[in-house]
Image 1 (cartoon, one colour):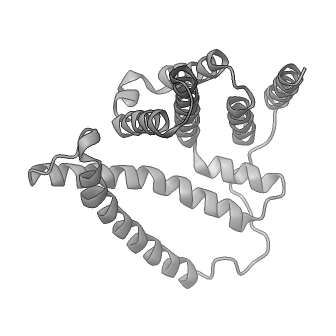
Image 2 (cartoon, one colour):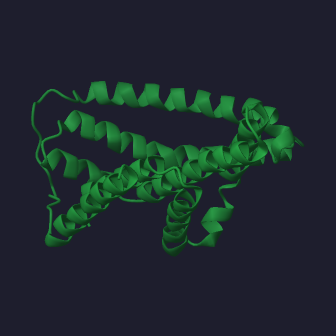
Length: 223
């Protein structure tokens, strides 16, 4: 499918997560996202996202402790928040596995200025790079005897992983900006494409189906 079609489906999926308040419907949507993630990337990729699962547990505990009301209401609200968070994160990771160049070219094809398209390409290219550097930093800190796993070591994780990664990110962005200025990026209003990404029949059908599901869900929610 066209990357824009996938992006529209992702947006509609996120809207559906917040449209419904029934815990079973939200759980179904979250499990659907995890199932598609498993089919495309495998269970090993889910196991690598320990930080996401740890942060989800952290969200669950904080909401349960600080919310007012009876135990059932607090637990239900906390589970809704966690399931929505997991659904959005895993569906976003799955979408980020697509070729960012194709997504940017598709946006430019429908009229988005190429400067904004390039910003998206740059963002998607940096995400796996920062993930790779984050793994290197964690391994280096473990070699020094610093424990980073688990809820008790969240402060250690922020101090010994997040801040070095932030410094590395700012350094890379600065060098990349200088490179773009040296090549006179943005001097022309339009650009040419080596390969064009077009919409096909499958894209129109999937887009129409996604909007029909959204319209039906809104009608069902407020009926």
